[in-house]
Amino acid sequence: MPEDPALTLALPKGRVMQEALRLLRAAGMRLELAGAERALRFDAGDATLIVMRNADVPTYVELGVADAGVVGKDVLAEAGSTLYEPVDLGIAACRLSLIRPRGATGAMARVASKYPRTAADYLRRKGSTAEVVKLAGNVELACLSGLADAVVDVVQTGETLKANDLEEVDVILESSARFVVNRAALKLKAEHLRPLIAALRDLTGD
Image 1: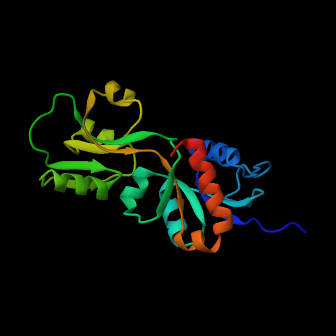
Image 2 (image 1 turned 45 degrees about the horizontal axis):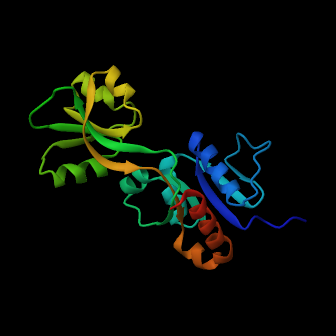
């Protein structure tokens, strides 16, 4: 009877998961997804994989349901996470920026964001008293509809901003996907996690 996988990994759905799996395999892990494309939790060989929304990864790793995981730095910052982040995987690169209608000037009364904590911290540092409104959908619409004077959102290519006559005013945070580890698991499963961390560092040059 095969042994249970040594590690449980929390991975975000979509393209980031595919890129993370590529790196984990290159680091020596045997991970197979055949027949499990729609499964949310399954044994993939050297690890049990739990597939979830990016924003939920820190919680699963912090509480020890997963030993480690892959999540964006923007999500970690918003969560106020204190997770151990031994490797910057260098994938899913983006930036979290303050965005306004092109040419807009003057004080901001209201800022909309999917990242209300990060937005509020940024505005506080800048001495702004703008109200922060949390949105879950396309936050750029808040500027276009007059709901907010600005938004804080992720930018990759900037093409969406150009198409809607918006511009980045300030970059708040440079983000990429990080390999994060539960601190208790790092001690209890050191023989599995430490070689994996070392291999990922060699691959990414981190």
